[in-house]
Length: 157
Ligand code: 4NP
Image (cartoon, rainbow, N blue to C red; front, side):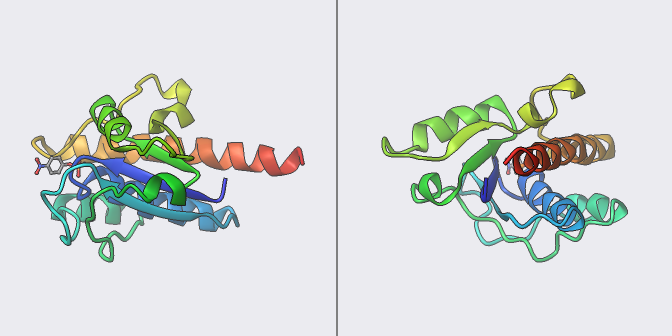
């Protein structure tokens, strides 16, 4: 796997946080993977992440300030090896947007962390601080799962 796209609804809370957190973790692990994030909706195109996401991520040592929202494009289904959806609504929207010739594997992000016990990363947008912290905790487990998978892949080659 060489490239991954993280997808949520607005691309201002969960998926830009995923992109920046995974980038930081992958770098620490010495792995080089192209990452990006996008939203299935067009509400926030061009905008910076939600200030609450920026603030909570900063507490986890992750800097989101350079991220800018964009919408998923048909070309993404060829450009990325894997597209990770935060929740089932995002996954259903991706399935509607995917061209018939799509090559990317599209799945729920939390498939990377099956032991976490939750399969969707809940939308924190209309809630309080604990929702933003839960997003970071879940993404952190998923990042551990991806790194383990990549390391066992390269070790078995
Ligand atoms: P995200 O959160 O999908 O994690 O970026 C949301 C951001 C904005 C909206 C919904 C969810 N909104 O309805 O504007």
